[in-house]
Image 1 (cartoon, helix red, strand yellow):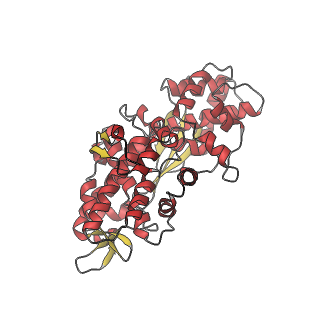
Image 2 (tube, rainbow, N blue to C red):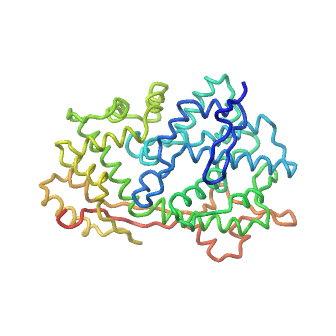
Image 3 (cartoon, rainbow, N blue to C red):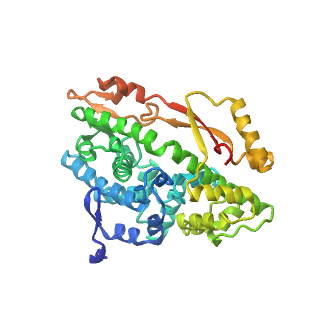
Length: 409
């Protein structure tokens, strides 16, 4: 099947023109499962912090595929064997790697379904599409799963220096305006190589790796884990949780049929079957945002107040600390809210709560970033670097937060 002239290219603000390489990719991009990603926010509720952060998972998936095309071309120029079948598998795997994301991205994993991550749902989508496309996604699934004999193929899709991260750091930096997150993805790709079927970075690319890891650290603290984004996501999670609680008690909570299905059924890995997948494929940001607009007028004070705060950006106050929050402080704010609005303990807990966030720019216990020295020796990026801060980036930094309404509100 020839690729339609109507969709041979996309004009991307980051890379310019992105080409559709073959008919399978064209058919996958055109499929309703993938088109749904146009209605899934890439950065959740981060637009409440950075007004420009309205880009979608659709943008990101195409950008990641574009970088993969460059990586394949580069590795082949260095005599690394990548067959046509493996090339198509790589492009499909990276194109569909985020297809399992739910409304507002990661918020879904803590509210609409229970302990079902987006990677698992992505795999279910890929398996369903593989049936539809007569086994054409078999190699892509093996690469995505990490079961393909060539380890570096999986590392290009999912590792600590993959095409996913190279795109989202550059893209999210662009749309948020956080310039510290900008990376030279082209330079990093040019420094890639393969040794014993493992993806490595040539020695002269060590400074680009350092910049990449520093950028990742900055983006997590300044964007992904920005305290305003954290409290906004918590309000969304708690709004959906309250809706579930009310529905379980027989209270009417109007929303779309699709969202209603996930709020009234307990969805886990065990029962995430074809019927659930089909329902999930129709769920996006629009369902949730329409529900929030409706629920702000609900007679239940908790649900109504949570939705109003989120829609009007009248968020809870949040404080970040380097040590766990003292229980005494939590109880103080808890009692104030409980008495002010005559709430039960369960209801007050929706407005006063604590938690923690973690940031690890580089995990030495996961697939490591290996540097290929000029003499052929392989060294971990942390050991190869003369940058004193790089070792610190391999340590997990934990911060603790408390959220509560401002006095009298």
